[in-house]
Length: 232
Image 1 (tube, rainbow, N blue to C red):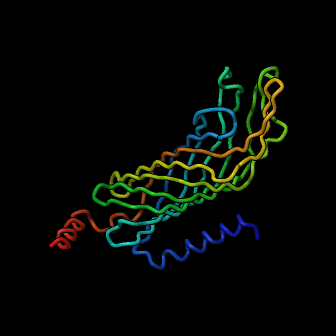
Image 2: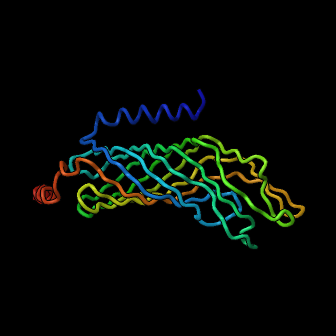
Image 3: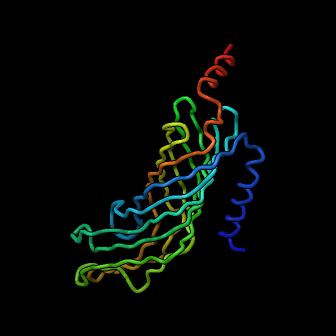
């Protein structure tokens, strides 16, 4: 069994064990869009926009809902995009990378302010090799287009903020960055110079989340009463 497979099995086992100590478990659905780039492609900017959506579960660890964990299964389209061939943007490209993501995120939740701040890890599986177009000036600068194969596994660190809007409706902003290369040794040529880069996914995702069963949680007024009783 490879290290990647061992990590996946361990994550699944941990996810199965957590509900044993959970105070509450609520399912949710989400949809949004991801702005992404590939570090190492010699381009700048989160210029690629793609669809994002999925399902998940919120696991609360205490009655006051201050600590919790989110486990999801998402589809996310990341990739590379540039349409300005200039001195700073050497080639034009439009390329999609389709992933299935499994994020596991630990959160601190302020139930009075409605803000959730979290950090965690994301395992992603590339479900199709990139497809798209590349245009460049052969006399100035160009990437190697003979091998555009990306690695199938991606493990990323993630930071996320969620805001409670109304009942079970939440707004989420998540940033994630690959911890391992998604493509190794991509070659580039400029005049007589040749070099290669390892590439990493970097994405910023805006999501709308609807969490089921939110009305079953303790109300804010009840939490305020409990807090006052604790102080007495």
